[in-house]
Image (cartoon, rainbow, N blue to C red; front, side, top):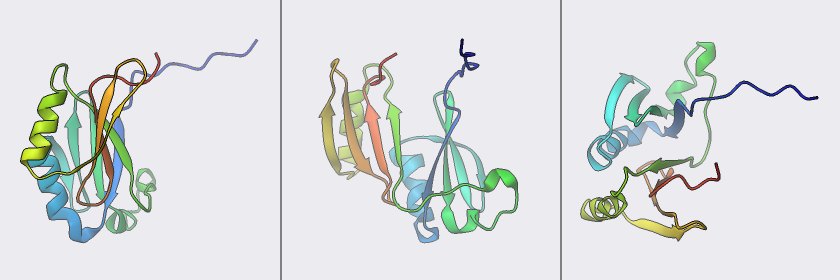
Length: 137
């Protein structure tokens, strides 16, 4: 019989990346447009609180200059993160994004009744806001 794996309580961190020139726009977008609270910052990145988790945004070139073993991550091209709207606030997110000039690329309706909107941050990362957990339990 196969041994079962220990469980997880959730995703603690998700990382997205940007080019150095985009840093001012990235900080404004996540702090002012999305209203996320920065809880830590470094020359090469910022950590934002999202519910129980953290969204890390790093300058991909500066991060590569770090020597700590835990800094050995990164990506090229656009990344993706999905944020779950607080209950009943999905429509308010659509209105907030429109009022701040953010173009919604797509709105999806999912099996089971869930909905989500997709848009890009200033670094080109694909950000999604869902009205609920979209995945099977």
